[in-house]
Image (cartoon, rainbow, N blue to C red; front, side, top):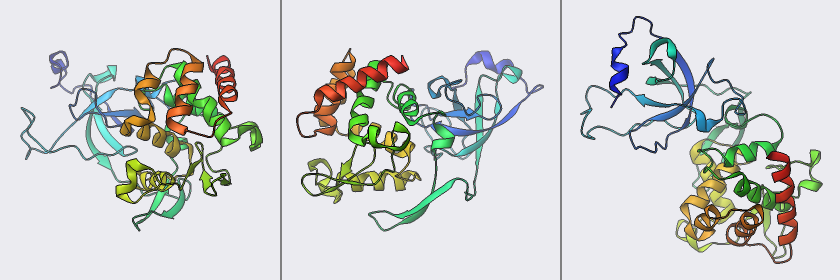
Length: 295
């Protein structure tokens, strides 16, 4: 329901807007979407983090009930371009989405074409430039994991994740000494090729065997379904969050209860990545380095 205090606005000073949907997981389950509004919030998530963006109500067709929870679910997806008005006039703090505007992807933002495990082919937009902060990929990852969209992890927990990704991704060997989601695959001791930030591979995992997907294949499938190029930062960071929140055995609850960088790095290593033993101290060291740099 629209707050009563905003019902005083008649529309004499109506402002319209265009924006990009960032999040559709409304914590109050009212069907709202979080929108980054052009000309108001800017593209730099360091200036206006995703967690600070407003939740916008959505106008539904008059054929829907409109009260008591009766009506169709909103179908707007992340990255949709939307049009709307501000319910508080010139204050521009209470957006109302009226509709979405179909986008035609151009060569600038169509980054790749891949065939998913299910056999569908899609054009993928590069969400890195639209939804992540500028700068180094390590900074993008830190800002993502500390945002609501990325799981609302504490700086200590986010750096614990970063320290692990640093080791897994071989940052010291990468160009620019930075995380590289598209680095060439490496071959693990068991013979499987490993890909991306967390070095996902093709070894079967009990949680998704019923879907016929290995962990790497699930990354590709997840990205295809959401319109992302799986080789990008946004796709892989989103997949880490997706896995953590979907599969309880990957350690989300334990990670959220950690208070120090070393604790977070250890939990993410042992529960989420589960690598061969012997690299814990290195992962914790890198996590502490990131904490000093970021915080």
